[in-house]
Structure formats: structure tokens, C-alpha cells
Image (cartoon, rainbow, N blue to C red):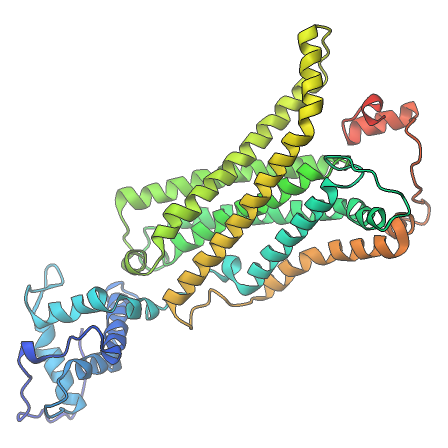
Length: 461
């Protein structure tokens, strides 16, 4: 570490004050600001990201520790003091200051007494692709829509409790808008969840392979946490809709996307666990990341807030996947025993309440995860300072917000024109949408229903 200064006449009149006279007051904001900037620059130097430390950081720190009642030296004298005396108290083999030296005090003071200022000077970039302002708006819009649709569909004619309303009533008119547009919302949520999980898989794989790289691995832990957490949150959005949206066609593409979502969720969890196992077992080789986690990151909230809710969300998704497979496997079976008939009768009575509790738990967990992530993001932003990129609104985030526009458009169209005309505008003029007023189906219609919804004619009646 050196400073090249030419044509300098060093002052011989100024003598550094005694060690005990230097100012290391942790309540001095000017001192802490200068110490934090110097420490962050020093870590960047040792991380091999920089070839030198800007003299301004050194000068500001040395000026701040000098007592105010002594003669202040010029810049070149301070640099001479630092370059030819202070940093000489370092073990060349270990690159560590000698115990009790001024260099040791200069190095330890920022993290011991001014850690917040060090955090603000670490040039922390964040992860706007997951935590950006546009993405946060997207999460809240999706959650509000899913909750609104969930409540409306639960009390609709075809909902969990099957409430009946006169066809001419305003309630029936409003609920029909939710019933007829939920298919579009479900498709949009499927694509959104699959995209989030695929992006999280790529990000976690990147973190796993870059963790030990000294120059490229910065901030991968924060990015990994946000990726797996919010991708799991997006799966809960989808699960809530699927629980309350009854008699919605199950196209093969939806089955494929659901399968892909489950596989990506499993892959993300494996990558996440492998990455953090490497971090714990081999420790962090990235000095800047290690300082961030030790002094800046809200690790307590991650351990006691984000991690438990993440696990609950994953457990809920797994339980629903298992229960669906078991339900589909047992659905076609018939039995004439009294025990089997009692079991089927019990299931018919209990099914609405189980679905309601399942959907309620999913909704509460979804909002809890969103609230915790917002709080976690705000704490990180406060620690990182104003210049971080964690809240930037990028071009891709605008597209993410626009994901939900077709849902609102279709909902408004159905309300304005009615289901027949509103949905009819989406298909070719060769076909027309007509209201289904009968519960009796032809054999061809029954076959269609079995393919698309898995329901028999008897179950539809």
C-alpha cells in the first residue's frame, strides 16, 4: 500500500500527538463517518478489488482522530505519517497489525464502535430483481387480488360453501365477474410462480458456484435468501387460487406447470441447503460479505422470522401435493362396505371445512411472508444507506407489474358486458359463448368433462 507523491517537502516541525491523546470517541459522527469509509476501502483493497486506497479516505480518518487543540498538519505531512510510520506496524507474513499499535486501533475501531457507518460504505448493491420497488408493488397487487378472489369465490354459487344468490341480485352480478375471470388469473399466477422459481433456481445455482470466488461472490447470500423466499411466496399465491377455484378446467398445460413448479421448488431447496452448508462448513472467503453478515445484516430476523415461515410454506405446499395425489388415486375406487360408505359420507361433510381451513392458512401465511420480507428489506436498506440499488425500479419490474393487467381487464369486461358477451370477445367469431342452464350432459360432454376437469356426470349433478 503506497502513495506516490512527487516534489514534496516534508514538515519536520510537526510531531504526532501521543496515542492516548488521539480522538477515538464513538459518539463523534464525523469520526465514525471517516472511519467507516476508510475501513470499507481497506477491505476492498485486501479483497483485491482495488490497487490502491484513495488518499481522501486516509486523510479524513487521520484528521478526525487528531485533537482539535493542536496544530493541524498539511496533507502531505499526514500522508508521510501514515505511509512511513503507521502502516509499518504490520506483520508482512500475516498482513495483520502488531498488537497495541496505532494501526491496530485504526483497524479495529470502525467495526467495534462505528459498524453502522462501515455498512453504509460497503458499496452494497442489493438485489433489485427481487427486492426492487416495482417487484414489491407486484407482490402486493398479486396478494390483494388473490385474497379478494379467494373471499369472493368462497362465498359464490360454486364456492366452498356454495351460497345461492338470486340471478338478478348485485351480489350474483359481482361474484360472476370473479368466477368467470378466475381462469385468466390462475393462468397468470401459474406463469408468474413458474418464472419466479426458475429464476430462483438459476440464482441459487449461481450462488453455489460463486460463493468461494473472492471477486464475484458479493451479496449472493442476500440474493439467495430473497430468491427462494419470494419464489415460495409466489407458489402460495397459486395454491390459494387453486383451492378456492372450483370447476375450473384443468388443461394439460396447467398440470405440466404445476409439476414444473413442484420440481423447481425441490431443486431450489436442495441448492439453498447445499449453499448454506458450504458457507457454514468452509466459512466465508469473501471478506466483505462476512463483515456484512456479522455487523449489518438482520440475521436474527432471518433466523427467527424468514426461515420458519419459509419452512411452513414449503410444508403446506408438500402436504397439498401429497393430498391431491392420494385424492386422485382414491377417487375412482368403489366399495360397497359400510365402512367405506361412512368414510365417503364423512368426507363430503368435512370437505368444505377442510378446504376453508387450508385456504385460510395459505392466505395468512402468504401475507405473513410478504410482511416479513418487506420488513427485512427495509432493515437491509437502512443498514446499506441511500445509495444502494436494492430499491431501484428496473425495466423488467414494469413488465412484472403488467402481469396482472389482463386479469383486471377481463374482470371489468365480464362485469360490463356479462359473461356471454365478455368472454365471447376472446374467441373466434365462428363460436359463441352460451349460458349453461342444464345439469344433463350428453355422452360426448361427459367425456369432455372427464378429460378437462376429472368430474363425472353424477358428481356434476
